[in-house]
Length: 312
Image (tube, rainbow, N blue to C red; front, side, top):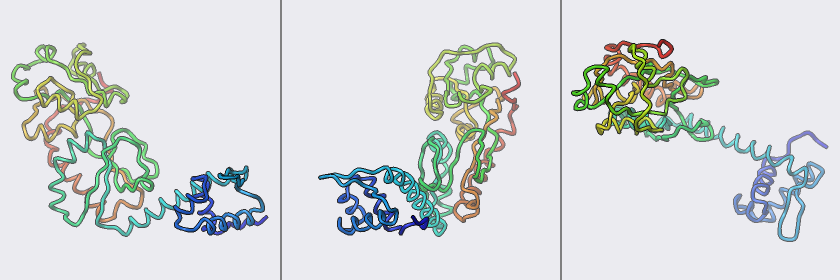
């Protein structure tokens, strides 16, 4: 038995037949005749010295040798396809595919993208608003913006601005909230999207930072940060607004922050891409634009008292 790998065309024919469990369907997928596909699989079996399929009346099934080969062949072709797509993307300087969470996409990216499009008309932007872990090769993604503490092994990872939370509300609601006592009477909105942080960054921790033992636990709860923020913008109550998601509303006056004390979350949004790809023209242009946009609202953070969440 030779250790030399068989021809790629024969392995491709086997992979298709193993996935479909049908020579006819595999032949249709590969745009060859069933006889040609059967010839490729027969040559593969001769190369191995053992059958890969049992030919039944109107079906086929894998032998033990076929089962041993099937998963590795499928994985191998998927990896080849991903590598080929990655190689193709290195030649494309005009398309940029970005994935970010729904809240960051809605509250940070979407309101600002017109400026980027105006400055870079040569770049075609594509977005995938998702919290799922993306595979840069498999999912054809160039850049991911993710919130948390990492690690980001094997990736170019640029931490963005420090993230904090603090009470924000509409200007109308703020007229009746002048101190902690009046704040205690407000409707509290809970953003459960950051409940995974440790130590917790929540209402109890913020009040503790203000020297109060008050720990509100009643009020509308949202699993998505942008939904919690939309509720606050509608005047429903007060929410612990996250920096990246509220700075534009604060700068534009749609929300106000009467207390000026914020809790640092210990986590950040990170700008991620495969190592070695960070200087591709469209990736570098988008990164530089993101950093410049963050700088535009840095004055809001500069005016705050920032307290680490670890400190009660």
